Length: 499
Ligand SMILES: Nc1ncnc2c1ncn2[C@@H]1O[C@H](COP(=O)(O)OP(=O)(O)OP(=O)(O)O)[C@@H](O)[C@H]1O
Ligand SMILES: [Mg+2]
Image 1 (cartoon, rainbow, N blue to C red):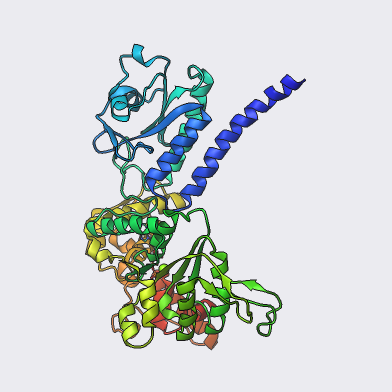
Image 2 (image 1 turned 45 degrees about the vertical axis):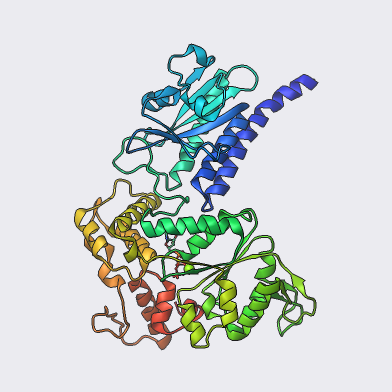
């Protein structure tokens, strides 16, 4: 009776292992994590699930055919690189077959060079190809040294199932293959979801890694649409607080009267309509990160309260007496030149110095160069052709030339919208310049002579006419709400009500 119960439970436990692997990967993929961290996590989960001493993901480099892997627990060994076809991993990459070697000393395909580099002693190996939905081999998943004996046939099937999950996970990162390579992957950026390998972006990655590790306050600058929000998340996701909340306060959408309550919370009865105590975002961010987006828009009064919080990490709820404490790391962003805001008296100097412990300016797309524009465009093409289920689309030569020539006032966001629009509007498979709508997206001045016009029929109510005008402005700016609000001379909140 007792035995039967145990047997019945065993498959469940195994399924749980698979399930937990999936859940963890899902959670990591939802964040901008370091790819090394993702691969290390996959390795440790697979090793546990298969009761092996170690598991490694070898990525097949799409351009050279080399096998590349990181050894998570050996920081002094930055990367393992094997020439194409080397060892059992190379055999699996070449043939797409699963191999199960019960005694490495007896298998001529076994390559002992890796053990020499890592100091590990490999007795048994089970390796399976990681193939995408087109059956191309992108990586090799290898487990070493079954804890109790040799890997079984069941283990082989299990590892193949796991390789399938790893393939799906990889397809959701920037580690996707270049469109023309029959196998392998093309590593484009250090951080999952963040694309770009230009010199200016490499400097950004370096600063992100250093700032992430240190828990310091970071001030992010840069033109609209350069990725300030994205990089703020990356700093959080690569630091010690990654498992705690990341709380954003959008300082532009908040009506002045509500900012303090939004930030610090309020007590019951603090003002009319406050019928219960509400926690502020500072409190919600306890243990994690508080991201103050568009921080230059805060009033001087709120700046003073924020300064106190930054100095001592203490605050009071609106209408409350008790002094509360919250341990939140602060990140802030603005598209404005804060130093000149300080000069004009719009921003407190002391707060400015508190915020800019580390200053990180995101380069404009123009500074990153044409190759980066092209790389980002290809990335967004993959994203949107998958989202809108339009496989096989490509950017024509003249579209690429137009993308490279454009000035990108709206930076990466503008590029993202241009490609999205093209994927939706292009009738065939090859995108041409006219599908990108670049002319319309550059609405520099609402009053400029070249600005596109919008025809409004007479007979509309003023409200309807204004709604349509707002919609047209938004459309012409590729959906960028901050730019539209700026161009219309209204706040983003008003824009939301009017749109
Ligand atoms: N390097 C990048 N790789 C991939 N996507 C990016 C990159 N940079 C920005 N994006 C995407 O571009 C869009 C704009 O980025 P984000 O919102 O972070 O910019 P921002 O600087 O905060 O803009 P704003 O000043 O208007 O608030 C987002 O959809 C983001 O995911
Ligand atoms: Mg932003």
